[in-house]
Length: 359
Image 1 (cartoon, helix red, strand yellow):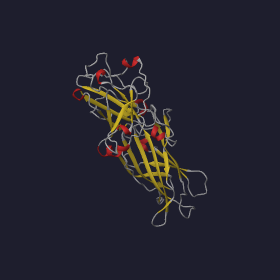
Image 2: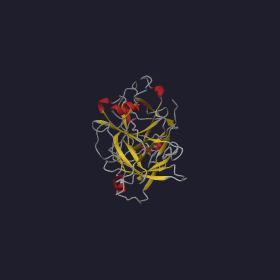
Image 3: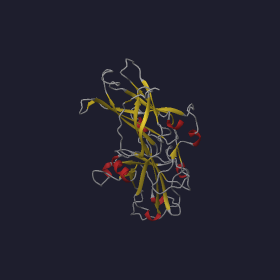
Image 4: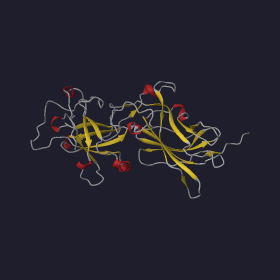
């Protein structure tokens, strides 16, 4: 494993390091370094995430003293651990993942526990950088990964001192995912939508900054509350705290089904902190769509939730099934599924809705 030089300033002992000048006696023959193994999610979700970490991925770990607030931003306030697959011995899956310290790491002899356990707080930034707010344009290369953040909390009992510490990571934010299968026509007679019709999609007036609640009491291996601040959540659409978040767009080549009809599939994804939706989600999601109408520009289609309950929840994915109204240019929800963040994807047809007969 490549070793990186890691310098820990003296201030580390004062601001958040889980260490103490009083060392616990440990036999010289004992390996006193703290080792970690990592999983992502629980149950079926964990099974999907068993290939989440890649060679060189890092996690930041903080061990609070006297309930100090974790600091994952400033060097010297946390230790960095790196995943290297060659250190795993569990077969091809390399799961649970084992992480080794980059330079110096935690030492059991200098950890300061509470009365009954050693507390560990951890974060993983897939974008390799500390994240204060999610990116505004997540269609840029690598931006969706930079919008993700995983969080873990572990209480290691004193009786488990010296054992490898298991960390269960959870996705801290909410994902919105829209999978679209759109019919394709080269002219109006063949259909209203040309190839590459859906040019872009965005989440309107979203909050991008977040807060982590470290004062709450949670279950061991649980996920701390991560969402926007109460003050931000009360702001209106015109607030400078709110921005349109452009979703990542993935599009397939034009395909032909068994009936000879041509179609194209799109996948739109964005990650944002948990927050309340403005206007009950009626101004939440917009699409820019080209049509076979002779116009070089795009038509803006708006998502309308009707009576469906639309919400953003940390650690969950909102999958939407929609239909476009070709007259009103509104995107109407057919189904909305909020489920734990996992590999599950929901297909949906994006087709014109027959306009209602006017009275």
